[in-house]
Amino acid sequence: MQKIIVGNLKMNLLTLAERDRYLESFERELKNLPENKVEIVLCPPAVHLEKFGEKLKTQEVAVGAQNIFWEERGSFTGEISSLMIKNLGCKYVIIGHSERRKYFQETNEIVNAKLKAALQTKLMPIVCVGESQEERIAGDTAKVIISQVNQGLVDIPISKIAEVIFAYEPVWAIGSGVIPTEDDILEVKITIKKILVEKYGSSAAEKVRIIYGGSVNSKTVAQVCLAPQMDGVLVGRESLIPSEFLKIVEILNNHIA
Image 1: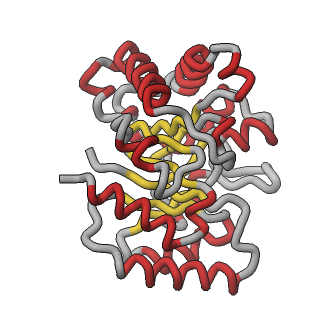
Image 2 (image 1 turned 180 degrees about the vertical axis):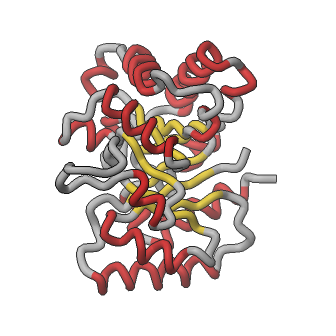
């Protein structure tokens, strides 16, 4: 199964000039990368999706959105549908990021609706799950993960499950510089896999990629991805610096036979 590295640029690149500098830097750094064996995805703000798609389509870098609405079209001021981003050339979309859950009160039911919308338009959803600091201290990590995964997958058929990627992103680790142990990450991976096996069987469950996100950089990627045998990483802050982002890519490449 090919590893995947996803860059979530969040609400950054505020001007066209800043965007263009970023893309020029990314393309330049990418050329210096030895043979690439992982799938690279960049998720810029929606206003930059078209330009990213144009610039990166020949670079073997996929483009994804950071969010979608669950309806395809209509009177939903300010929202962006899965069909819109699909028609801009997007292949992926992040769904249920903890910042969406925290600041915009996205529930597991909303995540489920967005997941269905993404799959309907043949986008590959990256579904984020993870516990808060309070839930971790209370020993509720497994309970939270089980609830988020089960409710997120309501009415998702076995024919679609291989297209779903789960990103374990503990809320307390995002941007904090603090990361869970490799055993903690592996335990969550096993929990998710168990749910998938129960719902869809072992053959289908094996096809689902599970990645890690939360304070990922070139110094932590071995602990959060390679040691617990995750299928890739979701990178936040470091994705804004192309050279640092591609260092993570290079480390993953070096560990693939």
